[in-house]
Length: 175
DNA sequence: GCCAACGTTGGC
DNA sequence: GCCAACGTTGGC
Image 1 (cartoon, rainbow, N blue to C red):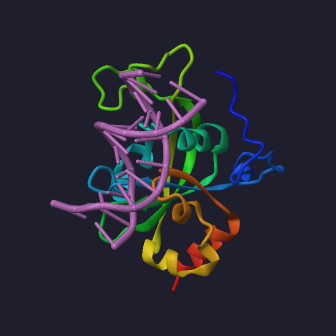
Image 2: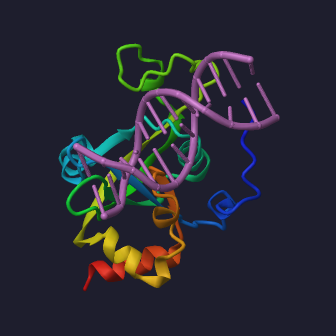
């Protein structure tokens, strides 16, 4: 597969070349009944394989956007409340998602080709819980966050967060 | 290549 | 539990 062209479009900044030591910010969603932030903290080395992503936009952010050391908001979806609850970091950059070629796995993709992988995983590691969860309701009420991918593209499970958005949410969690 | 049918995500 | 949004599939 040829690399996707990310040079144009609304989210191109997520893929743009980086200045030295630049860190970027992301958000991943998980249903806490399936895998919660507490589950991540309880995992060996507080790290897990973030796999099963089967949406091309999410895949592109995961594969071509995320770099080791980037910070990641951990969001609980389909829960009460829906909220960002913690911070993780990218512990390992994208590698072929082993669940895509595992016939026994629920996320098995019969069309995937292990020689030319379609789907990728990263490893993420827990960094810290937020002082308090920041709910989707609060995020939607904050005009400074109106352009967040979380708000604009409701179903995207991996999305970019701008430094300004990151700081705003961290500040909200401290009050 | 269009688009109807269908499946999934995830807020409400 | 409902359903809107949206991605995917398949008939034509």
